[in-house]
Amino acid sequence: MTRTAVVLFTRDLRVHDNPALAAACANADRVVPLFVLDPGLGELSPNRSRFLHQSLADLRSSLRERGGDLVLRVGDPVAETMTVARQAGATMLGLGADVTPYAKRRESHLRDRCGGERIALRLFPGVTIVDPGELRPSGGGDAYRIFTPYYRAWSGAKWRDEVATPRRITLPDIPVGRLPALPAGESPGAAAGGETEGRRRLTAWLEDIDAYAEKHDDLPGDGTSRLSPYLRFGCLSPLAVAEAAKAHGGEPFLRQLCWRDFYYQVAHAFPRIATEPFRPNANDEWRDDPEALKHWQDGLTGVPIVDAGLRQLRAEGWMHNRARLITAAFLTKHLGIDWRHGVRWFFRWLLDGDVPNNSGNWQWVAGTGNDTRPYRRFNPIRQAHRFDPNGDYVRRYVPELAGVRGPAVHEPWRIPDKVDYPGPLESHRDEAVWLRS
Image (cartoon, rainbow, N blue to C red; front, top):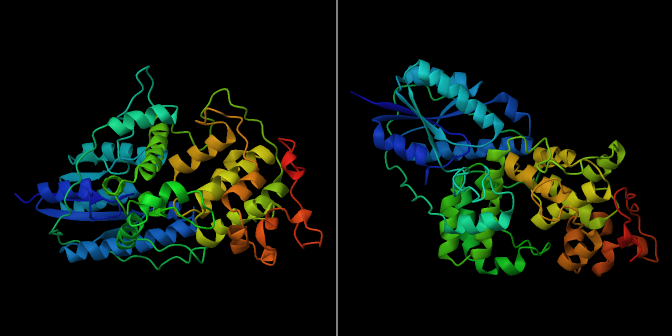
């Protein structure tokens, strides 16, 4: 009897170390690699829509090299998946497990439908290095609330083995569908998507990984990996990246990959992370100031280091991690504006925007999340002088200040000759002593 399996790709757009695809190829005679474009999700971020389409085109090419193809459908993921499964005569359906409310609803509906049609549904790891629900605190609870104890447990956990890339994929006789036209995107400097590009970047990054600890906070030097969009869409296996980093002695970078897993296990236990404070006793009183919010979004706060980060976000669909901390702290701790506005703004623009990390990091900065020091302050001027000492990062993204040489660019209001740049927005949460220091 010929066995047919459907593999529903979601956030695992790769052929290397893809447990769902490998299992289907090992246990079925025919395999249907499927991706369903949900029109509702395409409206969330033009940047990510473009990256997704590029990644799907690259995935299709990789599958065709192995004799298969990527079957594409547009519509409700559950309904379209079940239609394809019936057309192909499938008895098995596999997909990667995920933690977001959207993914959990999809999984629940697929389980109900598969049960009624006698199709075996199986979920596979692959979105994280260690499964989100695997590590539990010794004192009880569904998830670690503090990073350091989680990091210790994560470091001692046994990782799964990477799975081999299928050599041959046999597709049943089924229409494959066409990929819609490539969306325009909004950021002209956005990185291109796809497993091929992701693996190329990983190879190049590993040559410099030993300098990560020293350079990852250097704003103008841009010493980060920039692999986060490829991890977000699963163009790269987080496990394969971690194994490669370990082999190259990249312990500081491994710690950052652990932060990614940390927020996935938080979101697994607390799915409302994007909309509700994680800490029940958190101060959640915020100002309603649409005008100040718009200035922040446009990179017109009058604080050059903040404006540079927000303009990099629009230009590239990405922002340096240190700049993310500075800009988020300015919105929440200086302007006193609700962190959820920041979550939505970043989610609109970021190529790597996802629910667990975007929301978890915003809550950490706002003092409503997992930070053990919820009243922490980030002095933007001090941060600017420390991490952009000569002002090169600011001048790169704020052309109005290109003529201001050296560190004076961080405080244009102190320059004797008037500079055509707005003054800093008024603080509503602290005394803004950095203006007078």
